[in-house]
Length: 400
Image (tube, rainbow, N blue to C red; front, side, top):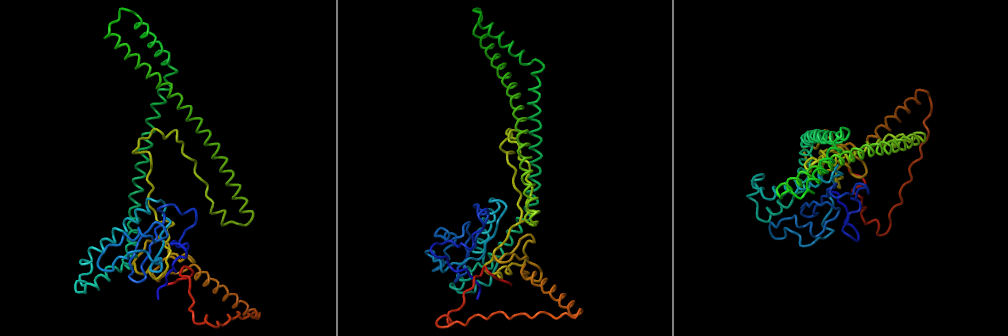
C-alpha cells in the first residue's frame, strides 16, 4: 500500500510539511495533496486543504467533486521548494493548474481509448491525476530551467541599460555643479535683478512685462537646478563614505565570527558563512525610470527540493532536472539512472567498506576481533496491542 501522511489533528494544517521559519515566505513553496480514494490532486501555497482549495476541481459527473473538506480523505503528495523567489513559485503553481486543466479537457486526444469506457469509468479515469501531476511537475521545473537562460540574458541587458542611463544622468549633474566655479550662479542672479529693475519702471507695457516675468522664471529654475545638482553630489559622496564604513565594520565582524568558529573546530559552519556584498547606494539609483528601476531575478533550480510522502511517486516522471533534489524529510536523495540513492545508504556503504578494511588488516596482523554484544530484543506486544498494526511516519523513511 502506498504511504500517506495521517490527517492533522485539531486543525487542517500538516505541521510535518512546514519548512523552517526563514523559508515560509508566501509563494516559495507549493504543496500538493491527493484524495486517498480518487487520486484527485489539488495545489496550494499553504500546507492545508480548505474549502476554497476544492474550487480547483471541476464537476465532471456525479460525486466527482467533494462537497466539503474531509481531512481523512486528503493526504500529502509532496512539497516543492523553496523557490528562490515567490514569483517563480507562483508561476510554477499557475503552470501546474493549467496543465491539469488540459488533462481534464483533452483526455480524448491523449487517451482516445477512453472513449470506449462507460460514463462512470471515464469519470474515474479523468479524476485520477496522480501520475499526471507528477509528470507535470517535472515538466514545469524543466521549463523553468530552460527559461532561466533567457532571463539571465534579459537581466544582463537591463543592467547595461541601467548603467548607461545613470552614467548620462550623473554626467549632466556634474556639469551643472561644475558651472558654479565658472560664475554661472552670479550671472543668473544678476539677470534676475536686472529683470526686476526693468519691471519696476512705469513705462513697461503688459507684453514686455510678460516676457520679463517668463525670462525671470527661467533664470530662477536654472539657478535651482544648479544648486540642487551641487547638493545631490555632496549627498552622494557622504552616503558613499557611510556605506563604505558600515560595510567594512560588518565584514570585520563576520570574519572574526568565522575565525572563532574555526578555532572551535566548527569548520563546516565557518565555510557556510558567506561575506555579504556592499549594499547599493540608493542616492545614485534614485533617478532610474520605472521600467529600469528593478532587475528581474532569473529563475534557478538550485536549492529546490521535493519532499515526497511516497518516494515511489517520483518514478512516475521519466526525467527530472539534475539540479532538483528529492527528499523524504529524513534523507536528501538525488535521482540517478539506477534509481534513488539516499545519503544514509551512501554513508552506511562507506562505513561497511571501512570496517571491512579494518577487519582485513587485523586478520593479517593476527589481532582477534572484539566480541559484539547482541542488540536487545524488543519486548513482545501483549493484549490488544498485538492486533494493532504499526503505523509508520511516511516522511521518516522512504526508498524506491
